[in-house]
Image 1: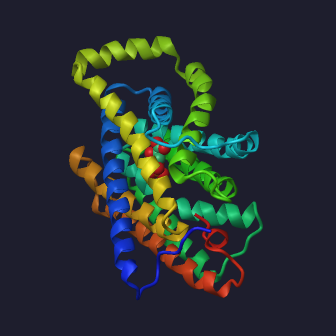
Image 2 (image 1 turned 180 degrees about the horizontal axis):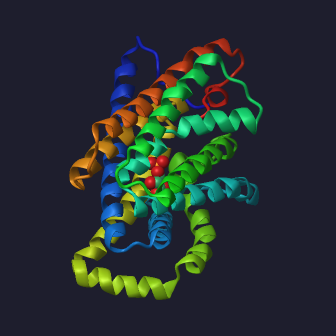
Length: 328
Ligand code: 3PG
């Protein structure tokens, strides 16, 4: 079982909080850097299927080298592990490509505003596909999430349907990824870091043929020349940065899952979106109307209410583990 970190009153509590604070700060910072470089690349090189593949390839390569040189202990896996990982990897691949396609069409901030609605998808999938029921406050918290996202979407100055649908598909896929990975990480034979490494390798294998079919080397090569002539050799550094930081932020987020409950993780993820939304608006000078910002704020406030509704329910729901009661 995952150790609980919430609660207070013993001396090691402060040390744990500091550790979690460091995890969160690192996760958010890496994520902000990824989002900035990813968008810089997509602005001049609009091939999201390739950039998604390269970010998985980079992570896979880094981990294979770490295992070969024993910087990291390689995981002991069997066929059963990879079979259980497969649906997680399919969902991870779809969610990743969909988010990247979204960001190639709309502002980073818009993608993340829509992605802040992930808890709503989690509840709806659990309710309608898995037949789980939730207490009324959980359903009520969906009103600001869905309402806020809707308000932000209809007032978005550069609205684009592919951008919107990409973020929505990413939400749906990541809900399934989380549902499947609850089973996959059970038993904890593989650490969070190695679990994410195996996930990258399998996702890379799944994604590569699709990326070639949808975009393909001819498009990539032609676009590469254009991007290089516009930006210069620095473009290669941007590409490397988006790939490396994608792996690092995901690795840290999976490592933090070893230390924190999914509930704390889900709150951390929402706070992460706030840092990305604010920093990308500043860096890319994204035009935002007050009513658009209001929609985003309402949606994020809704995800906060949602996370607050889960805790009392978990206590009431006798015999439920955090994993069972935390939908996101
Ligand atoms: C991706 O490219 O996979 C998305 O940007 C991931 O989004 P998230 O990790 O912030 O949910």
